[in-house]
Image: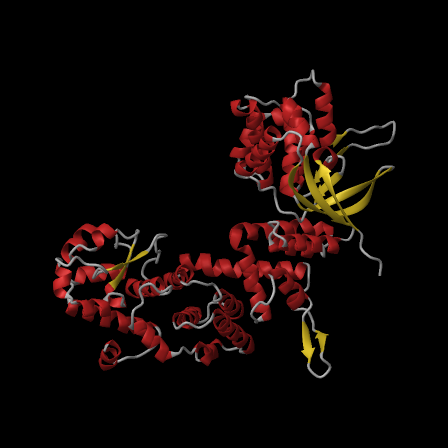
Length: 592
């Protein structure tokens, strides 16, 4: 088998724009905003001012190389797998410099124009061609032809500003239009013109600023380089590579449609998109991930194997998903399920939406999402609320009693396997996969919980129980836990009269003495006596929490008997949420 040839070198900007590039249809949009564009310009400008004879490294590109023919002309073209944002910005800088340069400086204008676009030469049978062909969208290509390729295009500032105000414009078009305006402002503002000029900046930019590139002729090898460089710290998303690998298996005529669908899902999840793809991986593989997301998909979904103990060899199994359309359709299907559960449920059913809000807002990890999606895939709304409550009960109980993350993940995977194996959802509801360790849970819930990672979740769970499902449960972004009996009361306060040191130590951090507030704690008022604390501090900070409101509407004093009574009530309530029946005698025994 012939060895793949990998091409690698450093290129100064003047050499970068001697080559021909294509941004393929499977690439992400141009997403750089004002900050990234200004940062690039500032960095180059500072390098030029501080050491004008030095080389300045700007970044890297990963390319797939191909030999193309345009008319009678053969040329090398490079698909950009990584480096699109930076290269496009360099392209736009060159176009803006061209249009800011007066016609009298024809040499500079020609240098810039040649770096952007080659005119047709009919005498030598050479067709016109842009240095970067934007195949990501037809309308992006048309925009670049009008506002970048043509001399004077970037000077149409009024038109570019109008584009920014149009909500229906492609995200790449809006970001490119914004980048042009940002670059114009940078070169025309006083801070740049004082002690600098384009005549000083541009030679450094062209001859001292450099990129590193690696390229190969095989798409699969180029993707591998993309992955390797990702592992070495270049900020690439696993989802970008996964999209590229799957789009490469789809007929060209369908690629743009699938790319748009993928990007719309990616925009919805934003930085959590890789997490969503991990949930899909879990649903298919039903095992704890052992590698990064890309290797998991490659080894355990597209090319799974079983280990034969007798032959000590790995035997290939049928793929769980095929690359290409099968993957895109599966991702879109589960995206629809996710929206039905996490978006539509809030509008259709308060109980369902409230339970999911509690879990999403209160639980520290999201391993529970995969079994929820799998259940919805198989059984839709049938007994859905009951299933979610069982799922929450199991997941939170495992967390509260201190099971390791590995054990908690395996317990969630066991639920997915059980869902796969049964056809009747009623059987799932009575399965032992939802069993919790009752004795350990009783012990933890009855003791001190303040300071534990799960304390906020328990109080939110309790709050939802008192809140009910007649209205939407919407905890505020900022939630803090407050002690009613303060942690450090003044020796002269009523607290020190009503509670001795031993009583305070016993009760201070238990559930019955804790409430949720809708803003950060105010230590200056935390030590007030109960009556003043209610009026000055709690009244305006508890309105969003049903349990907190209940306590301060019920109790006019907060002595030992009040605290004990409330603690027993909330303990009974929380135990009931975990389907644990407990008697008054049992509670007294746990409190002893």
